[in-house]
View 1 (cartoon, rainbow, N blue to C red):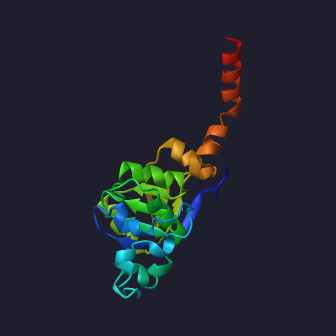
View 2 (view 1 turned 60 degrees about the vertical axis):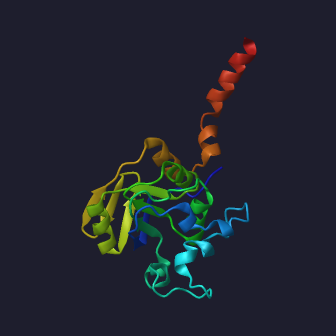
View 3 (view 1 turned 120 degrees about the horizontal axis):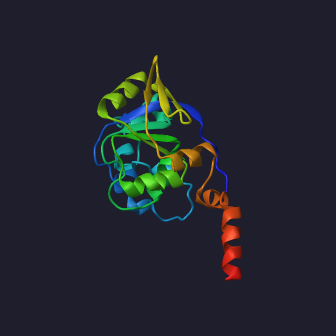
Length: 192
């Protein structure tokens, strides 16, 4: 199955510099009543975005312009820790985020991002501060670099994830790329 290929992307950055933001803070469990990937965006960071009466919390950064239109989240250490709910990646993607930049990610959350076309990038503190100061950046995935005003910073990503994003592949698409090899293997097994 194909998803939209990701080569270069320019977007507005929103800083949310908290460490250990867990999946329950990203999408509270009370909102996990559907199995579709869509419809979770309105509940993203629910307990921070809304007051007890349901109104927008004017002090939360995603409720403030220009950050309310941001598509690149820059955050702290150990982002996505806690339970392994894939709904957290779904909520971020459904809200409109295309990229999450953090010092580090929970391993399971990182994998959930790669499975849902949400590019996770690990960067150190100084680089993330530089990105936030720029407000708008361009990510060049094939060259593994981020254009920050007049500067360029580089990042690492495993080759398989880079290939998956650039070619717009999901897990099934990645498997089907080896269809001929799989068929040859199966034919060989039938001969045994």
